[in-house]
Length: 269
Image (cartoon, rainbow, N blue to C red):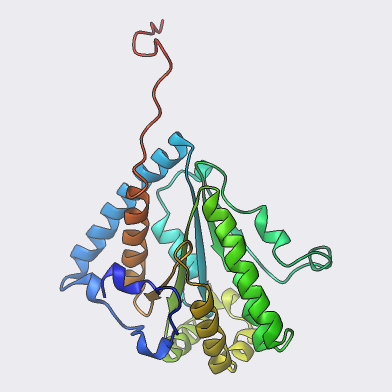
């Protein structure tokens, strides 16, 4: 799969079963070459992030959504390991607090969006409010559709005020999730990640697939596209996301700001 093939065009009815979670075309024939390519991407991303921060004009919002074990945390660690933490922030959205529930569901999200020169990464996001809520029957179909509209309008506001939005759905198969859950259960260093509640969510797999398909179909827009990233292979996942990030940042045509007058001739004792 090529990076361009991951993008969901607007007004597309998504069927995730048609997307191959095992796709590893981006790796090529030699994994060692692919790992070397990933290192090159990290170096390039580090340079582009510094340029974004220095120019202080653009904003980049990255949304990561996925089923448990698909690798949201791992993606952040491996793709962004070389960037300057001054210009990158990560927000994770857990169950809302009573204080947050007393306000509209987007209220807690808005103050985490990136400022000028920043990258903000949402590890889960406002989409939880049309996924968990739908699967568990906490909102009805009419409210779900209203929230799709709210989200599209919210993201349009961000886009029209200078934010570039990339949304990644990390696509793993149910069999791959089973393997990763078993690895967590059986590896002492990973057992802290294993929660019985993960199995309850796994039992709702089909309902979550329906919810994701509906959300991806309704909210992949020209100003905030969704990309379906094959994620059974961690290396393929990281390569694909890295390449898409680099292509996006390069497309911003950024430049370092001009130095103050006299900087070049300044004498430093």
